[in-house]
Length: 132
Image 1 (cartoon, one colour):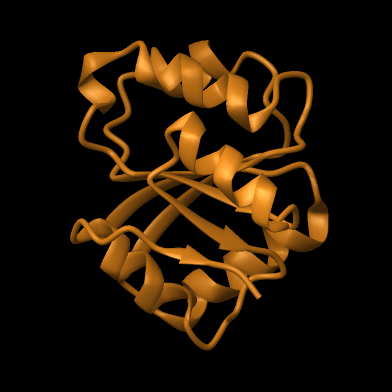
Image 2 (image 1 turned 90 degrees about the vertical axis):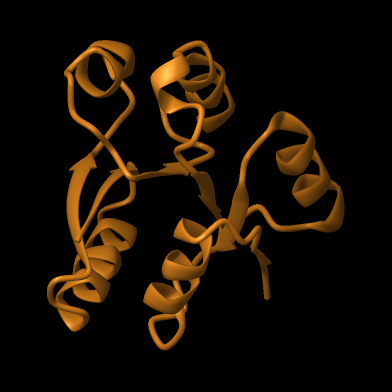
């Protein structure tokens, strides 16, 4: 079972991810933060061993880009995939996310039919830039 952190301020998106995790029992244990307040203390200094981190880009008070920078400062997170979950999927935005250092991008709304498969592929080292 994968331990997944998801930072998302949209209640609907949080609910969809929870539904997805329930559709694949035993696949992931999800912790959801409804905002990025105290992100470093809660997520990075908590001692929790995350297998994957999913970040909304337009969350507050710190953005997904800023959270990614914090994550990359900690060597214990070097091999943990950090995935952008975002509705901002225009070509130039995708390029910006790649250049920022995200390991993959999945667009919202989440594709429930393929979501757990895509997460499993990312966990096995595949880079996925799934936008529609």
